[in-house]
Image (cartoon, rainbow, N blue to C red):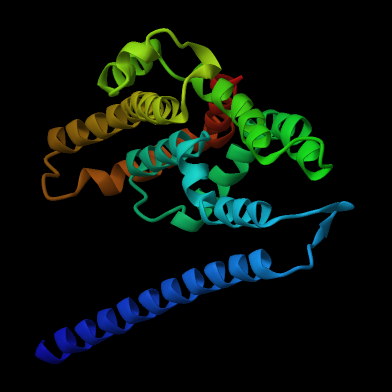
Length: 259
């Protein structure tokens, strides 16, 4: 036991050192790259236009924040939480595995977010690459479609809650819609997403809970107290889910809630 504990501690120590070294290397690379572009007299051409250090920093920042943006500003959080509730309600433990659920959630997220991403590309990214708009205008134009999507899925109560909690609550009371700052829209959006995800999880649990109760009561009436009801109910829950085309129905409902 002591040998296993010592081996585990050594593995954790090595993993921590590896992650720390990787983080330092990435930070050094980013700062070095930005410094090279800032000090170099030669500018890199993008679509025929000269680029500057600001554009490089913007690109590096977007890449580093991509996982955060995916979680907090898209429908990914609601989708993956609902899929997790479904797996727990079925009682299949690690089936489907996490990789499959995350991959399916990513594809569903891209399918739902496609109109928003297309609008961002048309009104912000393409003009920015063509040199028509500057960095500040690019950020403002890119944020508007995303804010509109998030506000359409956010309850008014959550928006008002974060307006009230803000230090500039008096000024924010006069601002509505996409003019609200991201510091208000993002937390309000993710709070609404969590509420809807847990409500959907509750609705998913009900039919499977009924099956568990029926199986448990049947086993009790037959005197099979020692037989675990979960192992008997699992095939019936899987059969019910397959018969009603559960995956297709669930994904269709998720997409329709956003449309």
